[in-house]
Structures are given as C-alpha cells and as structure tokens.
Image (cartoon, rainbow, N blue to C red; front, side, top):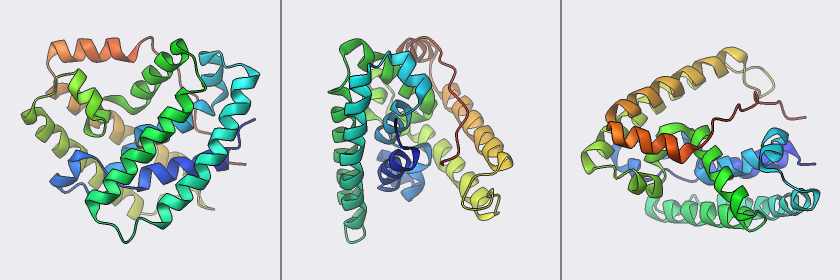
Length: 224
C-alpha cells in the first residue's frame, strides 16, 4: 500500500520549487499553487481509485512504492539546495525533477496506462495547467497574447489564495478545514472558467479530447 505522508512530501517538493513561464508576470513561487505536473502524477498514482482506473497490477504497485521512496530522497535533496539558487536555476531544477518523476512513473506503466494517467493529470489540473506545461500550450497552439492573459488570470487567483491562507482558515493540527477546501475549490473553478474563456472554440474542443473520458476523483483524505 502507498503511504500518504510519503507521497504528499514528495509532491510538496515538486510544488514549492518554482513556477513556470508565468513567473515573469509577478507570479513568483505561488506559481506552484496549482501543483506542478510531476507532483500531481505522484498524488494520483497513490489513489486506490486511480490505481483501479489504470488497472495496476500488484507488481506495479510495489514498483511504484519503491519509486516513491527514491523520489522522496531526491525531493529532500532538491529542497535543501534551492535557497542559494537564482530563480532561473530553481526553475531549471524544478523542471528536471518533474521530468524525472514522470519518467520514473511512466517506466512502470504500459502505453495505455501512461495515456490514461496523462488524461487524468489534465483533468485534475484543469486548463490552468497551460500556465505550467509548455507541451500543453504548444498542443493547443496558445498564442503569446493568450499566454499573457492566462498569466494575469493565474496571478490573480494566486493572490486570492494567498489572502485566504493568511486569513487563517486552517482545520487545526496543520490540516485543511472544509471551509478552506471549499473556498479554494471555488477559486480554482472560477479560474478555469476564465482561462477557458480565453481559448478559441477549436482549442476548447481539442482540450476536451486531450482530457479523455471524465473521471470522478475522490475527496481528499487526511493523512494518517
């Protein structure tokens, strides 16, 4: 079985590293508020529901657990070395770690599983992933003007999240309260709506195809 705290720690290591090309628009480290693609992959593959959707074998689950332990150590080393680096170097390290994370996990999966996992990542992140994943932006043929508009939308959403976090809506013991989760989800929903409004009808159609069949994600579980 996967250990929630282990995988959450690795995912955090991915998220806090640095943002993507939105950084130049004042997004700063809050670019990780949407969660880096590598972090989302780690979160998803530990979910029993996702494991069932991917039809993982017991052998694959064991291998993924081992990969997670190794990535945990790499993530710790990454975090320890970030403070003295320039923003550009932090971004480079983040991208390298995310690429390695996805590569290691994909190596355990077959082609069909990799394709479905990628679809689940896109569904989980929503169109806001455009601000972090250049591959997605290229696939959708996002223009520079659209990128600038999306950057502004993401920056505004992250400012809302920052204000909400500073407002002290935690659930006690370092947890997240239902109210906090609901308000964060609402920010995400509105952000995705605003970004979709920037896209053309053709881009929206392609995005839907890229996401594949809708998946009903489980509610977040508290770490044991």
